[in-house]
Image (cartoon, rainbow, N blue to C red; front, side, top):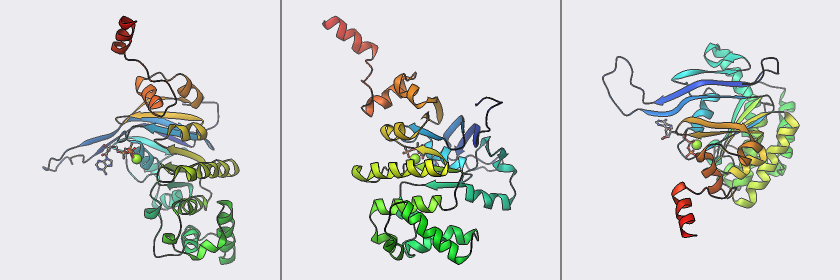
Length: 283
Ligand SMILES: Nc1ncnc2c1ncn2[C@@H]1O[C@H](COP(=O)(O)OP(=O)(O)OP(=O)(O)O)[C@@H](O)[C@H]1O
Ligand SMILES: [Mg+2]
């Protein structure tokens, strides 16, 4: 946790646990329970990028959804701008959608294939009744240009766009309401390598311009190193290591983190003690 005298964190996840398929007290049905997140705590400061890494199934997306109030934790609490998600009225929960946004890997699923791209960019402004029609149109044009897309695309449907163009639209839509926090869940994993770098650069630029904080979930430890000021490492639902990016990459304390870095080619593989003994005895 940050210093009590310092600035307030934007988001605090405090000892959160999520069990899927939890049996109701009075229910007789017994089905398998799955511990997805186990006693996880972290915080995100305003304007900061926190990288969240870990093997598949370690609970990253579940924790991201809990941060956004899309899932309710089984235990523990989430505070955003000092208020517990559970203590918000329905109206406050609706307003929370303006402050918290998500960018997914699956751009097809994130956009409605039947609507034009322009209409989908305007939708958040329509829903929250922000600005007069002319101002909404101007904001859509501004965001389209900021994500580097031709205005001619606004008339098209998502299916007529490339994966990279679609992800730019999803990013523009997420940033439309100037959110305080965006959870980016594997935002570049489905894209070609050549396009990944330009999308990462776009996210970097938008963040420096807007001061939006990111929880950046990724398998790709190279991408996370570029964007994140701090990193949290998840294993089997637990946060096993957390710290400044440089420290985690230069001197990871956990064997698990060392292995993740080695698998990404960012560190020489550690020799297990057995291997080391064999190497010594062979010499
Ligand atoms: N709705 C659900 N019902 C039951 N189990 C779930 C549900 N959502 C996730 N899980 C389980 O919780 C665990 C964590 O899943 P989660 O999707 O958060 O992992 P992840 O780290 O995001 O993985 P990946 O890197 O593959 O996206 C997994 O074992 C998953 O099967
Ligand atoms: Mg996931």
